Amino acid sequence: MVSIPLEVLGVFSRWLHIVSVVALIGGAIYVWGVAAPALKGLQDDDRTGAWAAQAARFRPLVYAAIAGLLVSGTYNLLTQPGHTRMYHIWFGVKMLLAAHVFVSAALAVSAPAERPESESRGVRRLAGAAIVGLLAILVAAYLRRIY
Ligand code: HEM
Image 1 (cartoon, rainbow, N blue to C red):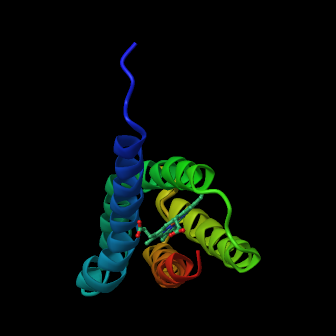
Image 2: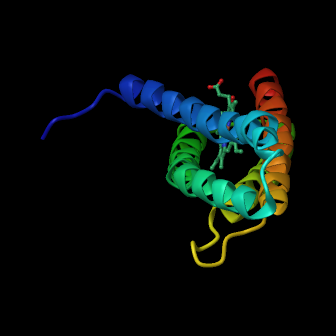
């Protein structure tokens, strides 16, 4: 059996975590700030159709990023034991923020094709995911300081 050195797994897991954050939060910011405002001039029906097409294309990326964050985050946590009580409190805060991001982003892109969600509600959900995601990144930066 081939054994992979733990350092390689650690680097891969950190890479997967960062790449998943980039795809999920960066994607939500792009839709909220760039793609959705560009639909503003369209008629209601056209806007709903364009939104449904965007959401369907973003969906696999959102699901893959959530899976990537759960797998890499759990690996990072289990391989770095012995943290302070303060670390665990702030880690709990980060998990609540992450849960909000996952649910908002998944709901924003999950409407079935025959019942497309309104563009305004979908964009509001992704805006919420973007803002709370930026807060989660702030908490993650703090976690690195307090170990
Ligand atoms: C919206 C969701 C999330 C965001 C935006 C996020 C963001 C981040 C960022 C930016 C880092 C620092 C990466 C680095 O410098 O290597 C990090 C580290 C980490 N994340 Fe996440 N993360 C999210 C979800 C999760 C989840 C679901 C878990 C656990 C299951 C998790 C566990 C961890 C751990 C253990 C670390 C290392 C923290 C440390 O420096 O001690 N994260 N996260």
